[in-house]
Image (cartoon, rainbow, N blue to C red):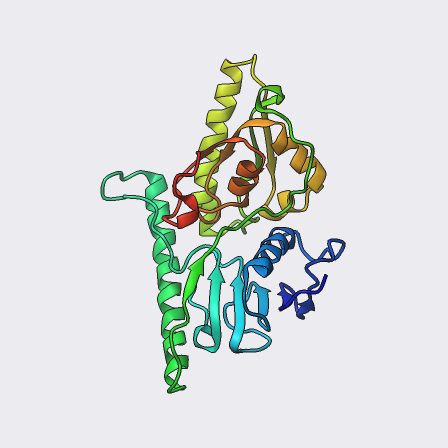
Length: 288
């Protein structure tokens, strides 16, 4: 089947032409979800001739124009794309601007202080990117503000496995993931004072271990990996089987508030326990 539009994956050094209907074309762990989303989009679109880029890059695309769409992944700091005025529209994971996600004036916890500091850094980067985008737009008299729409992260390292009814699942509570996003140098501020992710997850793991000690009849499955990349590179069948076998899936915040684990757990019918979720349309009424 031939797509009516042209798709490229720009998650590496060079754009890769993407055939949505070739399920054997394995490009990246993130592409399966968007491949299915784009196939559904193809069926709904009444126009054709669009060029769609799936990208990490907030400053550059291979081409621009009134029929170019950017689908932007991985921008956890929620930066303003520099090419906003050069494309027809932008669909963006992690939102248009950094969310605060806590109320430090009401609860002065260490977690909230770390969150506020991280938000201040992200906000400064956002303002910087916003000013750069405005300067770029001023150079072109006809430039306009392209609409930006928040979209879900979707799932990543997950494949289809046989569905297990909730009452037949063997894992009562599970968490598989990292405490730190990556290894920090010994002199790093993040290593000694922690980040919102590392502090939150270390507290959660401590509580989970205490819970497991008190409730020995329950199967508590805990797997801590050394970094974010480690769980993403795990065998997708093994990872998917663990999620499918889980009743209660713990979804603490990561480097940002949104995590792939949220959507992976929801997709397989787990009961999800999550932290703060941004005010986006796709989280409204979420069964968590």
